Length: 557
Image 1 (tube, rainbow, N blue to C red):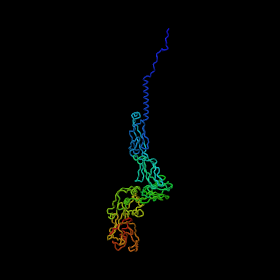
Image 2: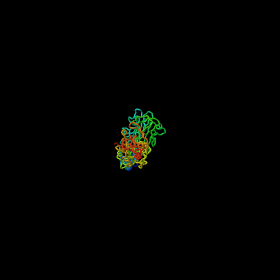
Image 3: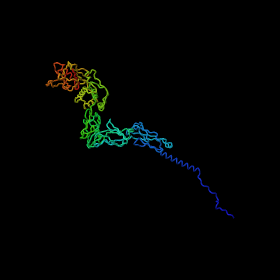
Image 4: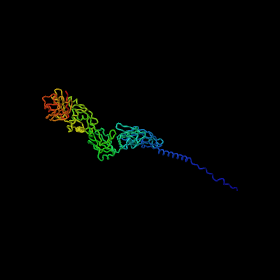
């Protein structure tokens, strides 16, 4: 029996190699692609941001991620006014194209346009907004101690790119290539003051800040005072006064405030440990006076030329008001033969002082009466010192109970301003009121004339003037002394002495020359020793019309 060999031929068919289905392969590829796309999208979205951040050299710095996009628009707005501020984008910084003020608050906005690849997911634009402040630099110390031979240095709390300094109206300007936190004022006197301002940015982007006073003193160790305004200078009645001391104020003045002479209404304050400040109120410092601050001890006081002098007081000059304003007030009060027609001044001390010392109101004068004597009109000159102004002042002084000298001193100026505020006026009823003008003609026959408030009281009444050697001086003079009766004494042209008691109705107008009664056999020719003599009846009529300040004109032959 033939046996079958099965060792080499299997009894079942062989298996084919295992293969992946096509659909599975395609799906795997798609999954990988989608995963990559998703990863890209996530990465792109994550890198599509942008922002504005503070930047010391501009209004703001814009930062954008890889897919953040490009800046398409920038703008800036002033927070306080709401007005647009011109800006431009330089690189990634927003820069103003017109100068800002230090400390000015600004809102900046930017629009960033994203790439289209991520724009459909994150949005086509990104709006950015931030409020920032223009930088400012402060002076670190207002009191500088300077060693001999050295220049004063001003220090700021941060670097500045530009500075302005010096005296008002005479400022110097400097620009630095590299910002610095200090600079030299250059050669200066041993002591002095200057105003200083700085800016962090250059002038194309920023104005300098507010000016501050800087005072420097010689480093001698002795107390030194610098005043603002400078000691010895001219100030107005309302000018605030600052006294800066090289040592703390309390070491010099203690707890007491300085004493002003004359006294002035106002208030002392202490802005900082080295400075005292006085702010006047009301009428302020008296006009036409020297104002002094008395010091508790002798110190070095900085002078206008920068030198220092040992002194126990600081002094300033307060000038008088203008001649024009003086005339305006006297006319308003009724002490001049002219009326004032013009701008009104508020009835307050501050307004009256300003009108007297800064700019007088605009307007014009006009005669109070239509028949004013020609000689009186010739004496009038607005805005100039005249005998009429002097006489009007004398009349005001007498009625106000003041010393009668015809000079507008500090007391008179304040009294005038108070009278204007109160609306006081000189009455016109009665011989002693209103306005009188007297003129004497030396042409033969000599006569005296009296005009009062538009009426002739006496016309071409006979009178005697001075003999040769004792002539009556020609010109216009104001009555300055009066007696109902007195003894007149003096010297005759030959050197002998005379004494005449019982002389009545006397009005002195020039030295020893007076209008008065004197008994003579005749009148109308030179017979006196310089006076204007009249019969008793005429002198008695005239006397009530010649109060202090009455102008008397002597017209030569």
